[in-house]
Image (cartoon, rainbow over all chains, first blue to last red):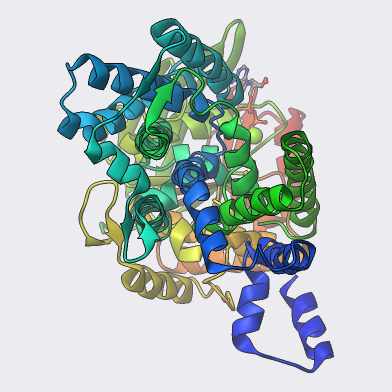
Amino acid sequence: MSEQTSKMKQGTGLRIPGLEALRDAPFFNVLIAIVVIYVMLTILTGETFNTVNNQITIMRAASVFLILAVGQTLVMSTGGIDISTGSMIGAVGAIIGIGLESGWMPAGLALPAAILLGAALGAFNGFNVTVLGVPPLLATLGTFVAYRGFTQYFMGVNLVTGLPDIITTIGRAYFLGVPVPVWTALVVTFLGWFVLRRTIYGRYIIAIGSNPAAARATRINVRAITASTYIIQGACAGLAALVLMGRLDSASAAMGEGLELHIIAAVVLGGTYLFGGSSTMVGTLLGVYLIGMLENGLIQTGAGFFVQKMILGLLIIGAVALQLHQKKKRPT
Amino acid sequence: MTENGQLLLELRNLEKSFGGLRALQGASLEIAQGQTVALVGDNGAGKSTLVKAIAGIQPADSGQIRLRGQDVTISSPKDAGEMGIEVVYQDLALANSLDVAGNIFLGEEPLKVKLGWFSVPDTKQMDAETAETLERLRIRIPDPGRPVANLSGGQRQAVAIGRSIRKGARELLVLDEPTAALGVEEVRKVLGLIGTLKDEGQTMMIVSHDLEHVFMVSDLIAVMRQGRVVATVKTSDVTKTDVVGLIVGDIEGAVA
Ligand SMILES: Nc1ncnc2c1ncn2[C@@H]1O[C@H](COP(=O)(O)OP(=O)(O)O)[C@@H](O)[C@H]1O
Ligand SMILES: [Mg+2]
């Protein structure tokens, strides 16, 4: 394949090293898609799309998705998947929300408690996948239903509102002109990138997704590492739950419903291979932005919620199909 | 290392059953220091099962393994590794997305910053040691920084062997079908690599179907039939026809 590309590159007669590296990047597709769709939406909305304020709105809405997508990228690197993220948000929101309302949860503890609670829910997923051997899709489909069921049982039709300042700050405040949730999401993304690209943990999850038998033949503790990605995904869901509660200044049993597909679409669109072994945190960041921007733009062009859902669903199929097609051409 | 010719590994009466199927029925074999022993036999003769017993992947049900005269128990790949026994498997067990150094050091990276799982590997040292290993084995890989998915079958085999060598197959390197599924030129390279190792004094056991390759690299040929080693012959004393006879059972073997 490298010979072919170099021939093609010679053919163009134009060689810009930075551009070539970019074209080989797994997130090249999503980058092109962003540019094209950005221009289209700017034209379609008569420039209301292309404003700083609107871009900040997109990013603020996308921050919860980004936090979750970072965890999902790690899970998918191992060849796993977690579709229980929305339900984990619901469950964490319910417990923290009720805890704050009834007074047994000090406001200052809400953040660490939410992260730990999420990690515990993720640990259950990790246990089911690695110890019981339930395939990830089904293990997390099970908790997708079970965690939501728990949330509805626990909260009923209650709506917790009037949350403490600490929490609304996390969800609504600005720092240097940028919403705090966006900062939070960027910090989480940077940590995720560092772990994936710079640590042995990142190497191990890629090795596990790439060739589980090869990983097992080494000293890598495949089970523990795999399980830990679900725990990290859970912790991300806990953090995301608090950010979402802060932004809405409320918690309800429906919180987080339906966002799991968003996350998976964003990660796959970003260039992370659905079946593991190859992933990119930069791609995930771009994938989340792409979906956020599409949603925002579609609303402005007058397309309704249901149209958005249809497009999102088709986008996932398209992204996966494209990925499988490219995979065939170049075995990475 | 101790002197050549000294007895390194003794397998005595290894037995292994899978349900009613007796895959090893009292297999015995001796390997001396510095020797290259080829293990041949028909499909299902028990070669892979014997390798897995030595590698600790599937310990034998009964029998003894002695290393340098000491009785040893090998019940996991880790045990085998600690004793200096490394196995390169048939299926080229590499992680496709990692580069050459990433594969050679997988699970045993030198660390720049120690933080448990979140330790940062010392990629400079990894690259340098990888270059050294490749040079020592006379393997040329133009761009070792790319994912190994881009490598040819022979290069991948070389990386797998390099991994075992770097880990230190101090005592024994076992290669299961190292030339299977490779092109002609690549076979030549892998055989060359085996020759290099032999010159360095590496003790090896090579499982192979290909008698031509077996005759090119081995000092001794051990023939397996129905879970037993039925003959061990000096490669220079026999012809291919003899070995084929031993494999199918037309010639009754005598253990040399
Ligand atoms: N894990 C296993 N379970 C059941 N039978 C096995 C297993 N491994 C090997 N066997 C059987 O043991 C016999 C020897 O197999 P093997 O050692 O793979 O032979 P070879 O490598 O010489 O072709 C065969 O009949 C094979 O079917
Ligand atoms: Mg075999």
